Amino acid sequence: MKKLFFLFIITFAGIRATFAQSSSPYLVKEKLNAATSEATRKAPDAYLNAIAATADVDLNGASDSWGYEFYSRVKDSVIVVLYNAGAPFVLAEPPMNPNKSQMPDAHDWINSDAAMKTAQSNGGSAFLAKYSSDNSVVMEIGKGIDTTAKETTIWMVDYFSGKRPGPINFLTVSINAQTGAVLATHEGITPAMKKPQ
Image (cartoon, rainbow, N blue to C red):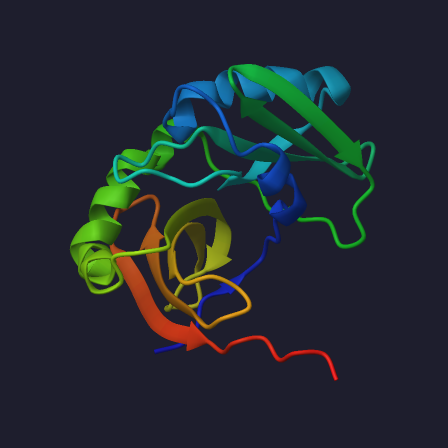
């Protein structure tokens, strides 16, 4: 089976640490219209190209914080709208290698709860049972190339167990966001970090 090669890159790693606490987890589509309004205030031509959880996702597919990534052709810039504790935070900057793929309308792809249910029944539950401590689950959605080399919208649900500098066990479940079909699963381990010499 071919690997899934994604056309988008979301760089929310630093943002996750800043926006990690909120009081009310929500599904990804709940803030999509509001995020779109925020983005189009910055650039009227902005369109959605990817979304990623910027805090852990619960087993209902809800997170305290999601980052909605938009692209403006006119400004050639990426606009990221984050919602944490109900308040928007907007970042806009020219990207080095912008993601220009456009996601379909929201009614054409499954919400985060459906994607999580699929991931749980395709290895996620077993992973969490096997690694019962130091767990983390994150999700992202965007345009990618599926196993038949056709461009489609894909949910990636990533399970992690372990803490740095030690090894990290992981499972990734890739799901066709428009049909709900599982495209691939990949389980492995990231080795422990080496101590500086």
